[in-house]
Image (cartoon, one colour):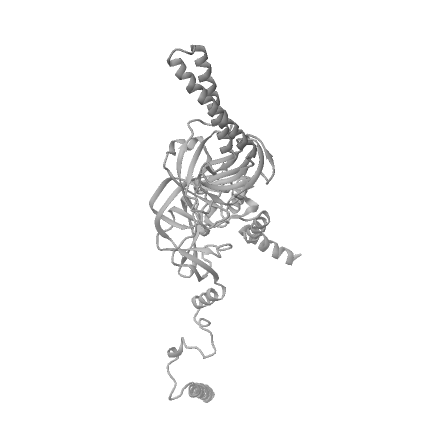
Length: 464
């Protein structure tokens, strides 16, 4: 019995010894394969990559996010938020007109003998424009001269006789009357002769010629239209509510289609003392600096300055996001788009005042913001980094209502009023109806509601 127990213990010890030796041999072999005299510790090359490996492909979630940002960054242009003065303007439209513009008419009868000027020419005061044939009138002048000479001699003789009381008072008065009549007739004929020469009443431009050579005219027939372009006036109609902010000498400027990139300075010359009851407006007449470029009859957009903020925060109007109910911009921050709700003040052409939401020196996206959302990676390509703005204008912003949660609105869930306001914002930036509908459709496709609906419908379709 004791012998059997001893043999069992020796067998167990042998098996244990064999198993231990095998384990040590395996461990030694694995160790030999993992070692080398020139191998560094494992953590020495934890961040290393092979020459063909892209940066950011190793290193965990952060590196993956950086790579995704580099691959999906949206190219944009930015402008620097600046601090400068900005003005508020009353906008109106008007047609330019000359203060001095008349039709030069004939003052005697006869055929046109000679035309000495043409449309478009500049003439000076008193310059000869045309002649009316004067042969008949010259003959009448000569007859009148002879009659006047005869009447003068008779009157002088009557004066001598009347002085020595050899002529009655009645005969003396008749001689004097005949002399005065002949004198008036002669002067009248001379005037008619002078009227055969058509002269400019003031300096200006010949804007129309109504006659042809040889044409028979009579007194009162229009011959030319003469216009003085300096001063040039622009009457406009201003709403009655703006009357307290109007004054003579108030600065303004206007733009015309012929020179769209230029603005022409003007000032308020006079303000009508009455209100037009039919339109509820007051007539304001501006004196315009034409700079030899403007012409009467031009249609002009007028901007009448009423107030100025001298230390305002200003951004380009193109920075305003169209795809929101309220006013918002995207700020470039650490390589991503940061959506900011803003409150706007005055607008001046292509610039808009920001009362809150951005600070001077920050950069706002002005090109490429359509479709951006908060946190979208962006890449600045250039553009207005110098902070410059383009153009001028003049009306207030669109109010302060913001989109829910500060995100992009979903047109499918908007009220009719909000949808109209969104379309109005897009119209103000020059988008056509077709472009607006296309943009709204893209908003619907990107809306969270659409995405959640697609995600919820996906498994159901799979199950079916």
